[in-house]
Amino acid sequence: MNIVIPLFILVFVIITLMKLIIIVRQSEEYVVERFGRFNKTLKSGLNILIPYADKVAFRANLREQVHTFEPQPMITKDNATVNINAVTYFRIMDPHKAYYSVVSYEDAISQFIITTLRNLVGELELDETLTSRNHVNNKLQITLDEVTNHWGIKITRVEVKEITPLQEIAEAMSKQMVAERTKRAAILSAEGQKQAAILSSEGQKQAAILYSQGKQEALVLEAKGQAEATILKAQADKEAMQYIMSTFGTADSKEMLLVLKYLEMLPKLADGKGTTLVVPEQLSNLTNISTIAGKIFNRQ
Image 1 (cartoon, one colour):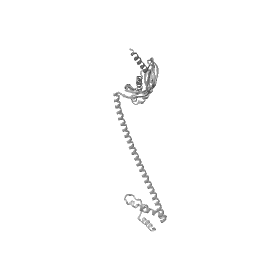
Image 2: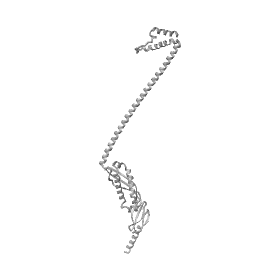
Image 3: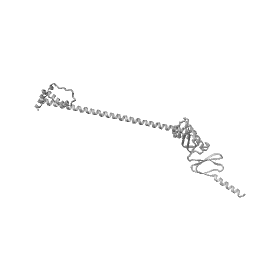
Image 4: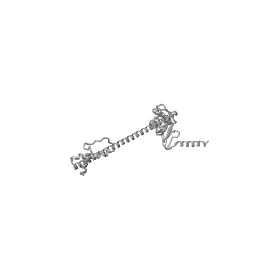
């Protein structure tokens, strides 16, 4: 009996000493109550408590935490049902608020995310919901930050993981996608044919323009050649006339020139293409021609 009491006292002292000293680990804080009321928040390191009066009510992990929830059915603006789940990253900034301001901050965050998501999705049509994930994430984070700040919690990031339409909606979207791609392929094919036709027409147009320009240039060159030939011939006739006048005198020069022109025309008359012949009065008989020709040879 005498041994039991000292043993009991020893055990009581050991337990008391164990309750007197508490070590808080790094990245943790403890909320301590004294006789059921908030007393203080213990930081990391060695801390002293009053045994049997002080009690650790809440152990707060200050590291970033991740919380997810199961997919929830939600209805879009155009009455399409989709299943959405999200993941939330948060930190406890104030353990006192996190413990005393809300019963369970994890459940509160989950319920608030679901409610906010339903409101956001209800403002968007199905196509916008599927393509506006970043917009939904940003709006979720801003809205959550405003509320969870009162709980001593900081939302660092919110991400919508999956947005899954119902099976019949997914099948309808698949058919719509196939039809849209077929339509786009037909449009691209038609555009290609149109462009090919335009290019072909442009090519033909350019070819016709080049042909016309070439033909025009050829006609211009031919006309220039004929003009130059006419000028040269006129100059030759002028020089011949001057030679005849200087050689035979003014009186016989006209007759001499007519004889020369007549002699130049003989090869053309011989080809048989001419059907009409106009002979000047001075050359109407061979006697005049021979007389004039004799004058030419005699002068030579």
